[in-house]
Length: 261
Ligand code: 0L1
Ligand code: MG
Image (cartoon, rainbow, N blue to C red):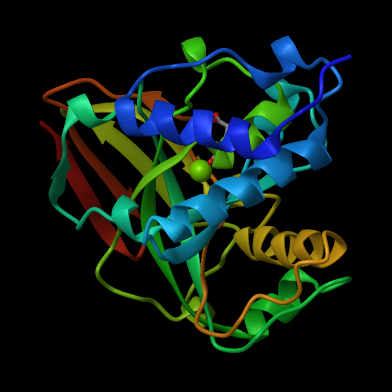
């Protein structure tokens, strides 16, 4: 029986991120490490990043598609936090050496017009309190060897959050059928993946509602007005390599893109 030092685990994951090396899974060493312990480590990691001077700019939901849930054998999505240093401008670039094994996902982000709070908020209620939606890339980079982990591991690792690229225009959700936004993911001119927004829990507004309900049940209160939420991958995650040009087109919202230097 080992004693778990949550702070030490958070420090290990931060060091792995900062120095671009992969570590072995927490569950390898502590087989009893569970989902709630994963969130305790994530909370420690967030505290440590804040004490380094980083600010939270968004929340993220992960593993929100049926396919990914099946692949990971889980029935509930997970959440994490996006920090200011993760922001990359649209049409900007990332530097390969700053990552371990980055992958790209195309997602939709929500901006809230009002506070939202669980325990039983619905997607329709979220939509009524949404100021805008916009396209966003999430670059995920697991701090675990071979991008392999169990759910408590990836929760501790802030759900692999690494970089985000937002589109520069915000859209009125009333002008879209949120179950039918088609998205392509093209790398170096080749269509690598595509999907429809319904892949995200049937409607990405449901993902925001689920985040509010999960935060409530974890005793973390409401999501304040003005918050940005990444709702989860519409496309599968694709591994990036140096020299890649990545572009996505969203029905009715145009393109977002970036380069890998
Ligand atoms: O959906 C996501 O943002 C990814 C969450 C963590 C799972 C992974 O790293 O593949
Ligand atoms: Mg994601």
